[in-house]
Image (tube, rainbow, N blue to C red; front, side):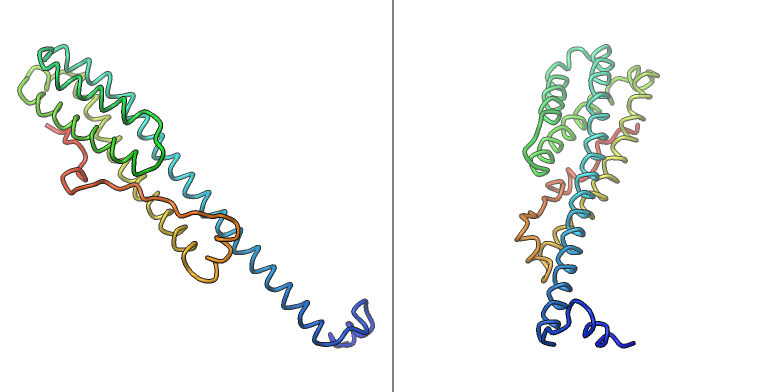
Length: 200
């Protein structure tokens, strides 16, 4: 039994062939639109998940810094300005941000403050030999590596979402349903791209 005979004897009997083709084409367009929408939702959720991973690592970093500052303070209490700069930069970075760009700006300042702190630590051999300090610097180095990996994953997910939003015909669906491009989480200049040096 052919498809035509099924249609001719079924609920579509009596409809013109053109109407049937229009209905089939409409169904294909609806299925395509649903598939495109679902792809955009999945990509957006992947971006959100990747950002959550970055935030987890950043919080871990923020939690390590007060202990690091206290350890350094025990050996270099007269380096008050450097210690205060680290605390100030940590608090700014840990505060809520409106965008990844704003977050990256404060993270850059924090990385610079940490570089200054470790430069100060170079002048104190007893501090560099302190077990607690060594453990904290190792944990911070591991966290910096995790942040870099998470940033790479996040930026890959953002690129995939942004590309999907830009290319035709999925840009039509993105526009209809209000999907917006996301910002990359980037470091400003080449000096800032390096993680704080925590190995002595």
